[in-house]
Image (tube, rainbow, N blue to C red; front, side, top):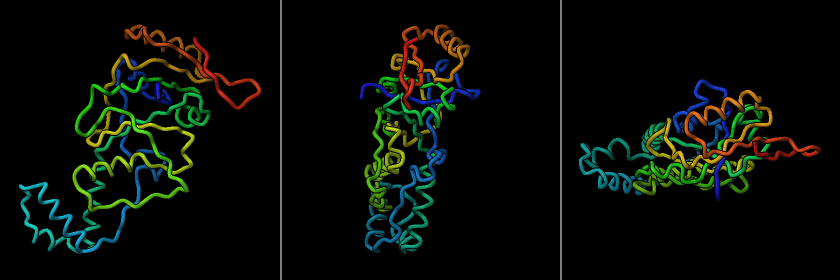
Length: 253
């Protein structure tokens, strides 16, 4: 993977922020258009010993927790109470996750139609190191490939994991999608502890690709804006429809 492509509709009040502020938006998973995206199913039945082992491990990882193991088990030892409590905890944790989505290809007609304002938007080409300066314990700063489930099936996840395995499971949720979405050839950056805007490395932005239906006035405006912002290293391309084919190709501007 040499580069990644970020599809944008480029039709909102914040449309120029990639250029003017050098930042990209990390969405909350519940904002995705696919209702099953990042919402894998969890096991709903656990043995008593599994639940008790989980709470013992939980207290070992949090020695300052105010409740004793007996107090915890009195409230959350049954399968029903444990699952209900974990549902709340996991749903709360998901609200802080941020995901930024890219594609491996700039020439997919459906991607332009769905994510780039019906071919009037913009695609930004980045080197994969665009977030390396932002690496933290919850954000590794490198792209992760989305897995498209064979036969649209996956193994149920578990509420009894703790620590890093639990974090890894949250990442798995963000990286597993239905086979129907395979055409997107998607890669994601995932921050388990932050959504909203995140700055990227200026040098990692390589090319701006205009849609086949982007107006000449808008193309000229964006090129001038890039010059004003000191982005003289950028290349500019435009997607065009191939004659006699249901395909796109890129031409240099």
